[in-house]
Length: 104
Image (tube, rainbow, N blue to C red; front, side):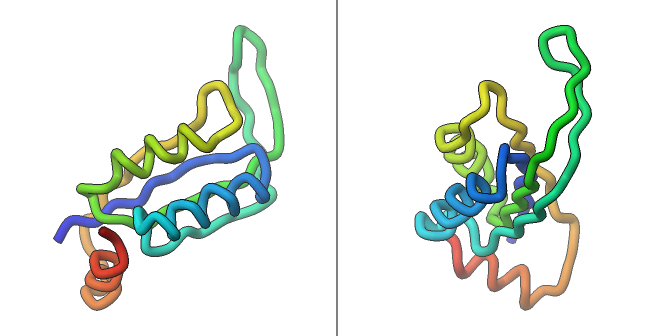
């Protein structure tokens, strides 16, 4: 069993909810956490920018992580969405089994 988290940022909590619900309905993720109210500071097209975003963390099988990233990118409103895969090296085995059982 190999589990990963897909970390993504979205332009709003509403966008995160829409993307998260789609990932769950498509069984690409077992669970999505949404953290609202994040401030991001970044360089974009030569200028330093600052803005509010929401964080989306999807729990999935590593074998599905690429599909999760692709789906996030397809549903995201930004030109260059943040979506990265973070491997899980351990955890509570029944919880990891649940993630595997809820994804396909």
